[in-house]
Each structure stands twice: as structure tokens, then as C-alpha cells.
Length: 254
Ligand code: 13P
Image (cartoon, rainbow, N blue to C red):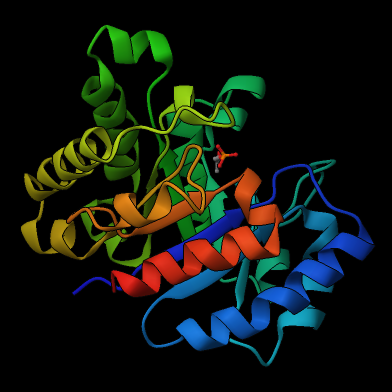
């Protein structure tokens, strides 16, 4: 049985005040969910130290929104997986569509980030997903298979034993256009089937999250789908009551 995971991705949002209030408000729901569902927040790097101080001792885990391929050196502006680990991160999101798009990150480069995160004790959360045009052209699985294949080629299928996948259709991110539970379930099940062509046991075990306008209203039906193991939540993760409702939806389907 796969344990559900609900993860917030704060993106470029937050103030010292809002982060303090949000983390404090999420500790009790995370503690209540413990044992049934895992709860985590991925924060902008400048806030990670604060999140560590606020969340330590609770069941709330935290992570970064990205991670560099290097552990140290002359790479201005980057955040090393070693540093992220030192600040208690459990997870590192890699390959979010906003980074693939705005920062021109290729699937091969994302695979290197995934590898660096894993090599330094972080659990990579590998984001995959198609654009609206690719969706309309029915190329969803071609896109996702090539994004997954880059990681399999570099790190091997067994690497997914210590990783999370997030399916985020780009057309659903921040648009209010959630993929229907049927569409999401069918893509999740095809992702699992593709991984199973390499290793069936790994495919069965890996958590596959859904992301893209996942909110308090859409989460219950999404999380009820057989191959959806929780959510990667943007906008709705910034509001404690909404994120708490999403956590409760995951617990209800655990
Ligand atoms: P929204 O939940 O705001 O659509 O964002 C989804 C996302 O990109 C999470 O990584």
C-alpha cells in the first residue's frame, strides 16, 4: 500500500510573517495525519531555515523547490543539495514546468538534479507533464515518457524506490482548470505501466502525486483514484484552512 503524500509548493511567495503563521497552523494537521498520510511544504530557499526551526519536532516535513547539480563551488545563486540537507530538507522538487520553461532546463539537466538530490540524501520529487498544445495533440504520454526516460537512463529504474513523481499538466497549473479525475487517473496509470516495463515492483511502489489546481474542492475526488497518491499543491497550499482540507482528503483515502 502506498502512503499518500500531500506537498505544498509555495513557489515565489511568502513573508517572514506569513511563513510563521502557515507553518504553525500546519503542524497540528500534519501530526493528526501522521501514520496515514505524509505532509510536506517546499519553500523558497531563503525561508528553509525558518521552516526548519518552526517545524522541527512536528510531523510536518519540508523541502526545496529546486536543487543544483553541484554540491559546492563557483555557482552563483544556486542551492546545493548538501546545504538543503543540512537545513533538514527531506524533499527537493526537480523539473517543475516553471523551471523547465522559464529557465530552459532540459530533461537531461533535470535528471542530473534528481541524481544530485538523491546522492545527498534528499528525496527528489520529479515533475512531469504536458503543455496544453501537447495535450490537444494527444502527446501527453510521449512527453512524459521522455521526461522519465532521461532519469531512467542516468539513474536507473531502481532510483524510483527513493523518489516521488508528480504529474502536473501544465495547462492545469494556476489556471483553475484541474484535470478531471478520469484524465489524471488515466495518465497516472500509464506512468505506472511505463515504469513497470522496466521494473514492476518499483512501478507499484512509487508515489505519484497530482498537481495543477488541486484544491479543497477537487482533492477528494482526485485522491480517490487508484493511482493518485496525493497532491503537489501550489496556490491552495498558501492558505492553512485549504491545505488542511486537502490533507484531510488524503487521510480519508489512505
Ligand atoms: P497550482 O496548485 O497553483 O495550480 O500549482 C500547481 C503546481 O505547480 C504545484 O507544483
